[in-house]
Image 1 (spheres, one colour):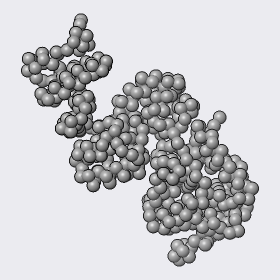
Image 2 (cartoon, helix red, strand yellow; image 1 turned 90 degrees about the horizontal axis):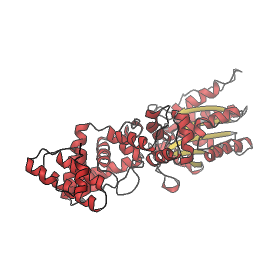
Image 3 (cartoon, helix red, strand yellow; image 1 turned 180 degrees about the vertical axis):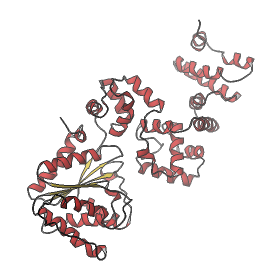
Image 4 (tube, one colour; image 1 turned 135 degrees about the horizontal axis):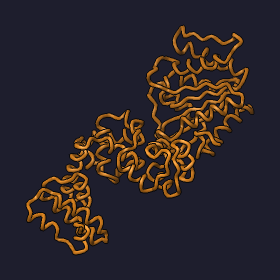
Length: 430
């Protein structure tokens, strides 16, 4: 049975195992970087790599980068302490930080060289972007150490894209310079979304959910195969076998949790823009999104860049979320009063910009009765267009919304001017 981190990742896991083989056969040190968006499964794959290294005789140490530890060698000290904890001969090298970090660096490198004389070493770093600058410099020097030592360095990096289009961002300064240099010589392993055929196994292992082929296809469509999004979508269906329709209903309900992974680092303007793009739906333009969010164009463009860097938006215009479930999760976090207000403003904005009548009516329907004559007119026009397009059910939905408007009786009577088939859809007979 595959480890959790290796489900749907056979080729990526094989490439990481090959790194260990290279170290064992003398090609070392070897550096590998696993790239992927938030929730792609980088940490799980790194855990599987660490387990594989330990099972084949490597001394393994693992840390997660964090900005909370900004002292020099914060991550390096934790890694070395883990390596030393394995020794029972009382011969652990002693490293004390007495001088400047530059003076301490050679001793930090020698600590790993000494450990690697007894057995190959694997250092695992989750989220390399958040390492303190001197730990990053230490990893770079280890990767270049002469004479070579049997050392594997495996790191993960949050990126939104593959190949030359990766969005790589460091905290800056020495960390950025050392990180870029480390990446130049590294083997890069990209984690795209899980393929649809791997989703049933992932669903069973993560959420105890049984997925048929149709439900798996819907999961792939809504989540892009992102394991964390898949878990958010399926958690409400634990110990069951949801249908495709039930999964779409769950996504539309705003029930899925877990948006904090993407939203936590956002500024106030970026969060406001994300909410307005979610309300506007796919294909939102920058100008209308900025106006709806009440941002200047300069603020909106900065927010767009932040949302792309956070892997929320695809890197193109019109503005579109990378995965439909992300939009649903953001909509679910907007308080109902704010959401209604945004839909009303969106309807008025699109009407003034002479957008498609059906687009205006969609927002009015989402907002509910507003008591405005122009709203009734927009709903009637949208219904007429949809009926002509052969979509009577959608047309009837807009007419039913128009009938709910608190207008005078003769206005509501005029609203029901529809064909006989349409009237039967709007007003059921008992």
